[in-house]
Length: 345
Image (cartoon, rainbow, N blue to C red):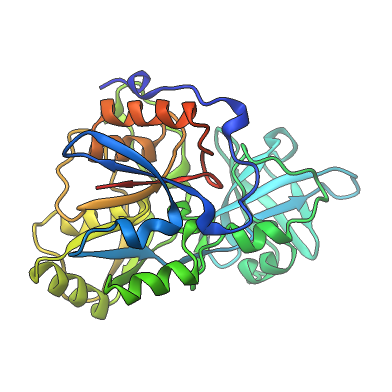
């Protein structure tokens, strides 16, 4: 398979720059794989749409303000630092923009933080060593900015209070992500309460969204792409509950591609674990993948040629997905992180 087969155009005006006033006002395209059909609803209708016999699995990771503004000592400038992964206390993998201002050995200042560039690789990837091995996440909570993707544009100095609230699910509890699990952004307490009222159960697992989820797929032969690993965790109670619900005949609605990858990573042996499990997930799902755990999927509209889009094509079929994306453009759905949603049954 060629990466170019998963390309499409999204008009710039359809890339959502801000969230809607209410999370559940997002549109919801309901796609039925069996009949290759789709209909157009609102996300708040989800409790009316889900058939009996399903339960939800959500990713409860919490995004932290992983974008820092740095400068070289004595210079009035802005260098963007995205914290990607902590190697050990005080030492971080980062993305630096512009990379030319942060060469090997360069000292950088970010508020009270001081760091030195100790490794440099391509594509803006650098390793920073922070002086004094501070709790960088705790400091970032005070001085950092929400790590919005580059297609969401904010002026420097613009208030980011709305993004701190809205680029986060209402059920986020475990800090550690540098990007939101965006399929969950549409849920509200009211929608969750209505799902409870009709007996739709839900379980929460964890995957800290890192560079693996949003790193570009650059290999033209899709099979050559390798996902960077991301930390996941499933508690014993949740593992047992998922096993029991599936044994009782209930089907899984995975909320988001991150949730899907954890479930399928753990289900590859054919038997879901019954004990607490944690580790690193680098599962890359693309067409031809055999799903063992996922029966339905809540997801956003993704970037072309991206690993989340390839996963959705693996689940629903490339031709059907491309048709749905064309229909979404024609009906002016809102795309990407702050955009609308899709339920694939």
